[in-house]
Amino acid sequence: MNNSVPIQESEARIPQSNIARVYDWNAPVYDIWGTLTESKARERAIELAEIRDGLTIFEVAVGTGLAFEEIVRRNPHGKNTGIDLSEGMLARARKRLQPYENAYFTLAKGSAFDLPAASSTIDILFNNYMFDLMTPADIDRALDEFRRVLKPGARLVLVNMTKGEQPGSSLYERIYRLFPALLGGCRGVMLSERLQEHGFTVVTREYRQQMLFPSEIILATKAG
Image (cartoon, rainbow, N blue to C red):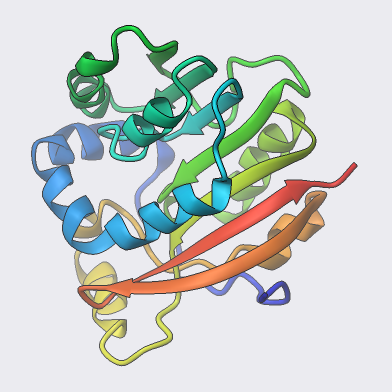
């Protein structure tokens, strides 16, 4: 477990007001990127969540539904909600979820800063590759909102682009400095310490690197 690493990041260079437009533009090719560079981290996040049927699960920044499809498949009789800022990404998620029309799920446009959920009602909250787009102040706002909606002891599962720990991973930091939009605005963050500051207990932090792209997978629980 690594629960003492501070956020060490370059500046967020794409404003939150522009994120939806960037991802509307990226939506047609995002699945290629997500499969080549993010799939191992995403699969590990699903494993760590230990989903069982009948839970209330929320995914923030659902994207094209790469994780949400597996969440719904494992939780067909539970309540599954996915939100995203980008209508282009949501359109692709809805298409991906068409085979699961008999499962209970909703997909809608929404913000991490104002989740459409009552306080202390969520069993598992997923979030993939969103905090690596945010300023520290926005990270604080989103974590406070995540904590609000989670039940005491509930699980928070995060995947982020992180600081590289293996040879070659610095390539993406160099690309970000020159052309941040090519990475969808993502740059490396490390969130374990910040989570503790916001009332979460970090159970585990794992590192995955795929096609040189560095990701952290964090399983945390809401402290009682």
